[in-house]
Image (cartoon, rainbow, N blue to C red; front, side):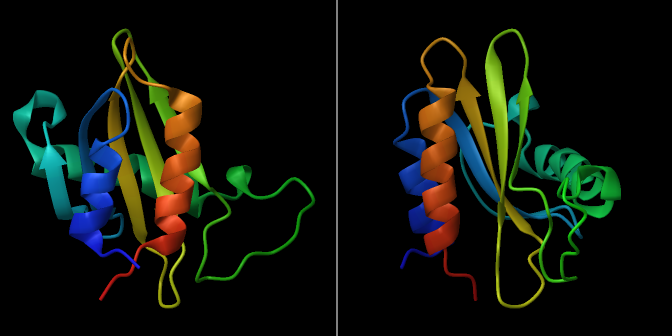
Length: 132
């Protein structure tokens, strides 16, 4: 089962990957980074992405449509996709046994990347990621 570094290296093997990070969305800190960062600063990118993740994870508007409750240990959101003219940002929440406050952030080139493939692979990586 891969740790943070192995997971990030695997993410960078995806077609069109520009950069990746594992981020704690409660603190906004990057737990690990690889590749480039939008604007050139991984820490700023992590903090800004954490704000988006927090908004999605903490608001009931994004809860399951059936109204079922979720535990404090897991967010009802699987991932967030942000698209712009030249790239995608995919934030995949990682379920953990403790507080589930971590996500994978993949910055993907729009021309060379495959968003569907990246979403599937990040889901697999999130399921295998070992933190601690």
